[in-house]
Image 1: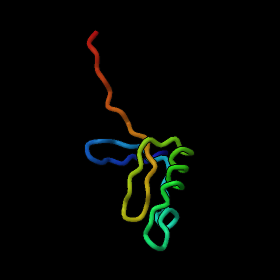
Image 2: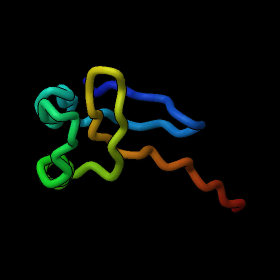
Image 3: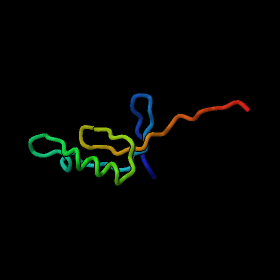
Image 4: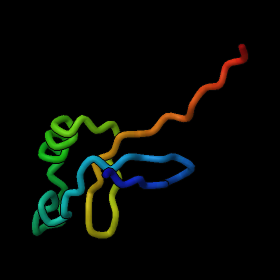
Length: 68
């Protein structure tokens, strides 16, 4: 079962969590190329960062209602 993450009035499905230590080197530089490759591999459309992880997410779109 996938986890949901609520942020700025948006809802995201967490596709994968990546530990910060895996993406950030000892000089506190983010390896953007590696992060981009993970994003493409997982099919994510958004990346969020917490204190401990990068979250590769899929945005849940708000439904559009039409009158019949």
